[in-house]
Picture 1: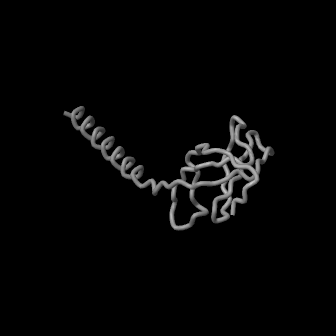
Picture 2: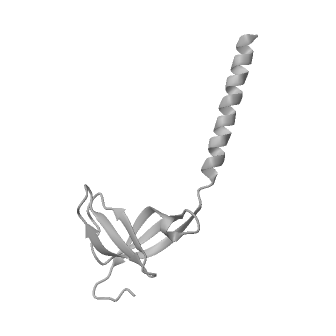
Picture 3: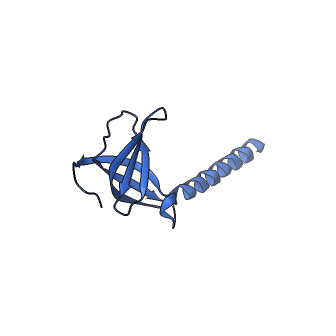
Length: 106
């Protein structure tokens, strides 16, 4: 009898914890695309950091682990909206959209 109660309590606890974890995972904010242009690269760390600027003048950065991004590349960034302040948003993925030369960005 004690074995059955222990198993039942264990299963109840496991189910409760899994539901709590699932509930927390559903609140991931909203995703949105952001078109940017690569304006610089920083080689001071282990992998180069790509520095991008969007149309509003906001600066965004991401690591370039295979060193393929160049100044003038157009980067479409998938962003994760973390709340009301755009400065808190995170870069999730980056997609290459082409390259421009001798064009004014703003």
